Image 1 (cartoon, one colour):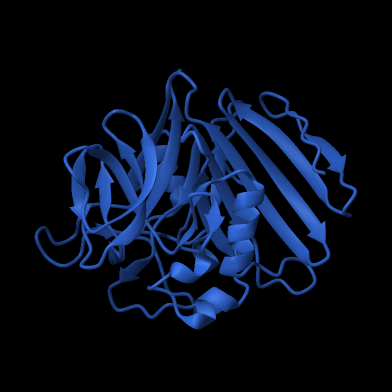
Image 2 (spheres, helix red, strand yellow):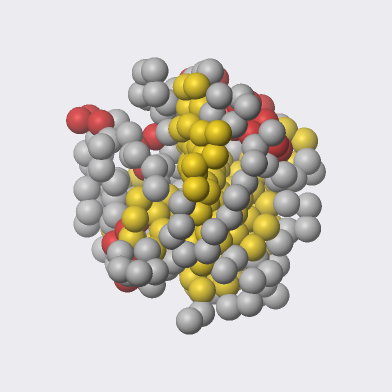
Length: 289
């Protein structure tokens, strides 16, 4: 069984696991704990952050990349690296967000990835920032929603409602009512569902007061294989989530935290492209000083 030892600020502890894995656990700020786990059979690298939504002064926010490039046109934002968005928004933690389409770009990985900052883009699902809707979708898509009353849920919607304050989309919904249900997806291909890839996932516990963020590295033979949707769903149930939502993955997967000593953003995982990818939106966590 995983033994977790928590320290505040940036004190690191290496823990040996009976299953042949290693974990580094780190108490970043009050209400935020993250851990990096390395497994051997099969080879995997995971980064897990737990966010206590009851922590006084803690806020979840959704932020777009750059400005809307064409007003009322089809494009909604411009791509920007997550750590740059985090510095602009003063986030203590940032994770990549929804799937997106960039103007004139075919999706690719590594040297084939042509996503760059300032490219015009739109998210595939609904998006809301501080009560302002800036993206909707034709078909209902699973979203993480922060409501005006500060409750947080995962629901399938086409557009934010008047009761919502922050919305970030994704898909599929991996866990619902405590049951792993990765096959309910209607947006991803069989290749996406059944092949191991780098992944980004967010989940909530039964009380809706603990947010779990999971980054799974992948496409690194002998080091990190990635996970299928079924494996992701099982992992989120193991982590205590009764609801879980897949976000954009592959080269977009990234989790970064602010070092409270230096103020700099530190990327906790190893992005597949070898560097962080510019994205359309992010989910951030801030703590009042």
